[in-house]
Amino acid sequence: MAVATTRGRVATVLSGVALLWGSAQAAVFLVIAARRVAFPFELEWLEGVGLDHIARIAAGQPFYPAPSVDFLPLIYTPLYFHIAALPSLEWPLVGAAAPAFWFGRALSALATIVAAAAIGALVRRAGGRTLPAMLAATAWLGAFEVCGRWFDLMKADTPMMALVLGGTWALDAARGDDIRRRGATAMLAAALFVAAIFVKQSAVFYALAAGVFVIWRRRELLLPFAATGVGLSLIGLAVCHIAWGEWFWYYVVNVPAAQPVAWPRVPTFFTADLLAVVGPLILLAALRLVAPTDDESTPARDTRRLLLALTVAGFVAAFLGRVHWGGWINNRIYLVAPLIAYAFAAAAPFFPRLRFLDPQGGDAPSLNALPRLAATLPTLAAILVLTQFALFAYDPRDAVPTAKDRAKLERVVAKISAVDGAVWIPDHGGLARQAGKRPFAHAYVMRYLENAEGPDNAVTERMESLIEQRAFGAVVVGYNNRRQEKIDAHYRFSARLLPRTGFGRFMTGTGPLPRYLMTPRGGAE
Image (tube, rainbow, N blue to C red):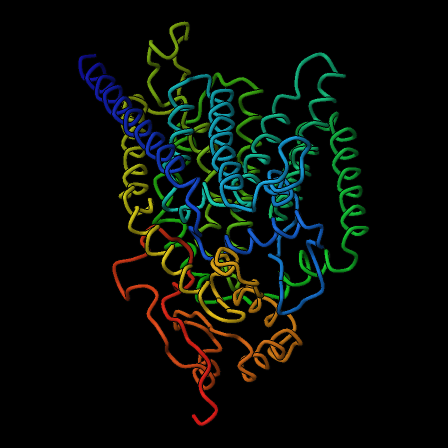
């Protein structure tokens, strides 16, 4: 008895430490997001393309135009950027704000917080305890670094995930004796899943998983859920087709589907992206297999099953996104969020009930396991959570740009602005717009097009022709451009814009920094 009491105290202490650690991680994310939201320059090399999207929406230009050297869109569905563009539209009395990053970043940060709340609510509903729910919510916010520092960027990933988790919460809530209310809640869930798809098409995997769950466990909701989902999807597709014709399908479906598989990433996904990042979470979820509970309610079991379906969908989305060309660690978001929810929901019975969180709580559920093992599980669960938090740990100073960083980029913009004529910045088009220059197609999006249509496509040929004609007053590169040899043949080094080392820790993504200003070579060279 004394041993069991000691083990219980150890588990309580370790769980309390985990709660404090998780709360600190959440607070750190909030501070980082607040510090970064108004930073006027790119935090990631494709944010500038998002800025171009916003400017085009504000100017009434097509979101998905025919491919050209002037602009190539990101290969995502359009809803997020249309919402991010709202401050840049003309409004009565207040007018229109200049296209900027702040609103899109604020949307993403808010979506991250909403996703945390949804994760916590789902875990609370599945496990009946507040402690695992809080640990799950803070674990999600703590995954900021391992998910590529993506949570507060002007990107569609976290808004998509917030809508997916919101739809999951609504679908799980569609229960009770009032059939009309259940049907309405299922319709809300379907609407949220459809909205998520039009924010980023990766959400289709979660919507399909939710549909499978409805067929499996909630067949009485199949008609309202499916009718709403299919109906809204068809309406959305019709609107997109009317607005952009064939180019919508071309950019959102055809180009992504044509990207080749980076085969070396297939095995490393399971090691570097799965085991090394969320291994403790997988073990935490597996504890339920070791010691299932005997007195679990059917609704709680259904919540956990729904989260499992969501996790499987997240695994598929993360795997496909990561192993194809262009896939980066931000794709971990698709798996990390649902896995956190499922792992903590599955392991909820193993966490101690803290009176200050659940003062009205009843007895712990009965564990179908050997007594000695059952007594050890709470401590083991707390250790796994602490281990996971340790894997999520990072130095927050690396994520926040300093006043010196801003000053250096302001000098870069000033030098670009002083160039006579057009300037092509292959990897950081946002700088061109900030320098008052005409933006051109981003080199990374051009590569998507080359993968889909071959290197001799019209856009690539036109861009290389402009380089050969020395049509640009300058080209700004970081010497990681696939056209560097051609650029070197027609342009020469003119100025170093950024130091070779010691700058850019706050930036994420894989793109090269805009370090060198190159100007046209003379006719005699």
